[in-house]
Image 1: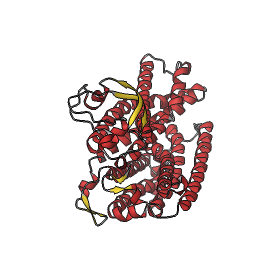
Image 2 (image 1 turned 90 degrees about the vertical axis):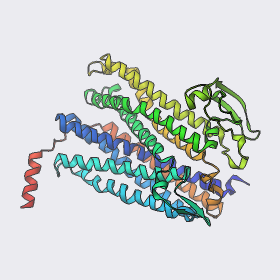
Image 3 (image 1 turned 45 degrees about the vertical axis):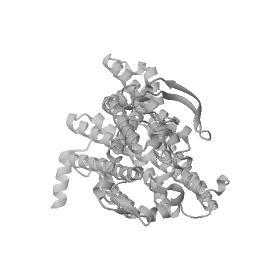
Image 4 (image 1 turned 180 degrees about the horizontal axis):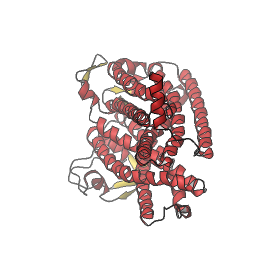
Length: 468
């Protein structure tokens, strides 16, 4: 069958394109919302006006990302009905309610207090504004929870059974807190925070490197380092636990991640592949560069395996992932970036302790600033790579072990899907161009340090007058 006549493949690509583009915006939105909370808390606690101006400056980028996130997410909702109607009919009773929770419980909370966060600086008391910013951050984080719950259920379905082609829920709690839910959500939230911190640190480093507002942005740069010290190592630890969940619940995905074709029995050691050339047709690797005994160290912290690791040959070709190269290298891209972040954070901490990040010395740290600028977009690449592993590694199942992807796609002409794919891609490229243009304008303009500081006493008196 020609690629352009394959409705299933075109529908998968379309959903991948819309999801990948959409994910760019919520990553920074959620992560930066908590950064804004920290800035406001520091302002109210220290009375340092620099923190207030930081909150005002970074909120501009937040608003830009929020708007683009809303616009780019609309298409995904339509695709459930247009491209994946059989899937929606089969699991809509559960996933529909989960996505409904995301809209009413999370997105509406975020949107309701966003106006106060944006326009309320001189209209509500500072503590009320801080509360609004916190509720925006909580709403954004709750939104990620419900989205991850829906996707995790597709990875490890629980809490019900398939009856006559439809999923009937027996326990909403078991379905919501399915085996992959909590570890996946924590892993994602930490990835979001980490990405936002390195974006903020990278932008701050750009200002410092170009000797613009050096004293001002040295504060945000060092705060990004301080928070990264907490987030970066924790992200790697949680990522390991998330990998253990895949090991036990999705063994075919793990086999694809490791490009492992033959089963390794318990008690034996197996190499960990660093580079491979998978040959899917012959069910083997044409060549590999491996670390002896490394697989056991990765999975159980010792060369010998405590449990067997199933190879891809344990499944029929139609029941296992085919894009082994994509899964294998996407996983290593994600892990490699995580350890690069860890190393950069460690070097930055050493320089800080050596007194090299003071206002007088920080502009001389050219190589460090360039490293942070280089790191700024890498978090996006790591998150997208992780999702590539997560989604492509689940194939050929859209709901693991229960509904095949080929059976979940709408029976529409491939030409229709191709047209909509081209249209969506064009629109998303335009949105990306707008994001880069307006984002660069915000960065080039820099912070407005002349913004007046809100006067709490004046706000209280104005409120009292309005009530009388």
